[in-house]
Every structure is written in C-alpha cells, then in structure tokens.
Image (cartoon, rainbow, N blue to C red; front, top):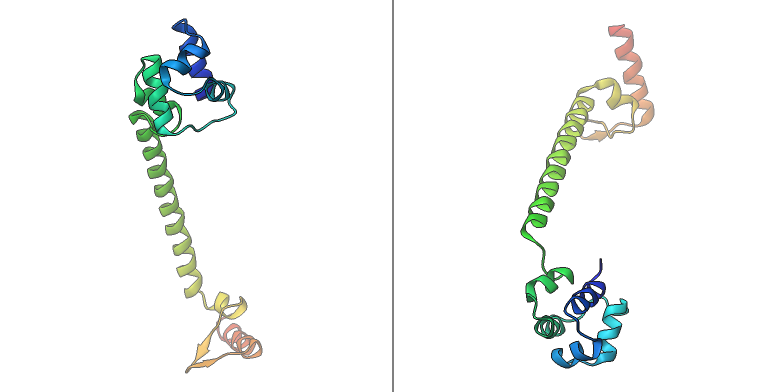
Length: 141
C-alpha cells in the first residue's frame, strides 16, 4: 500500500474528513487530496511531519511508509543479500581466475588462441606460433 492510501486509511480510522486533517496538519486540502490519490508520491519530510502531527501518529512510521527510513529488519535482510551476492561473486571470480591461470600454463592454448605470445621481447606472428605448434606436436606426439 502506498503512502497516500495509508494516510487516507489512517484519516478514515480516526473519523477525520480531508478538510479536518488538512486543517490540523496546516496543509491545503488540495495537496492532501493529491497525496491520498497518489498524485504526489514523495512529500517532503516537513510535510510528513505535519501530517503525522495532524493524524497523531508516529512521524517515523510515516517516514518509513514514504521510503525515507527503513525498518531495521529490512536493512538486515538487504545486508545479508548483499553479503551473499558478494560471496557468490568472489567464488565465481576465483573459479575464473583458476581457469585463466590454467589456460595461461597450457602452451597449446597460448599458441592456438588469440593470446599475445613473445619470444625474447618479440611478438610472435600467427604463422610463427603455428610453426612452433607444428614443431612441438612433432616432438611430443
């Protein structure tokens, strides 16, 4: 339920008209009506404070409903989710790093994939890498 609907519900539970709540809150009835209809979804904390006073409800409750504050258990849940995501990312990064390191030790992959390979500070061409691969396969196979 959005803030405006909650304000309307609280107002009706207390038996207040829109005009009376606007008077008690020192805001215009038109503005209150816009809030309750959801046309203004994010009133300022100052307006929320006025409405909380007019409704005689906890200011922090309305601030939470408006999205300015978060309840501690929601913060805890979000923190735990972020920590899980971080651990998963670390795990995936470690796997990727291991795969990369293993690939870098595989001479065949170095010579056949699009890696830069150097010999005595000279970048080997594709043809030179192919010649080396042919020599190695002749010797080792």
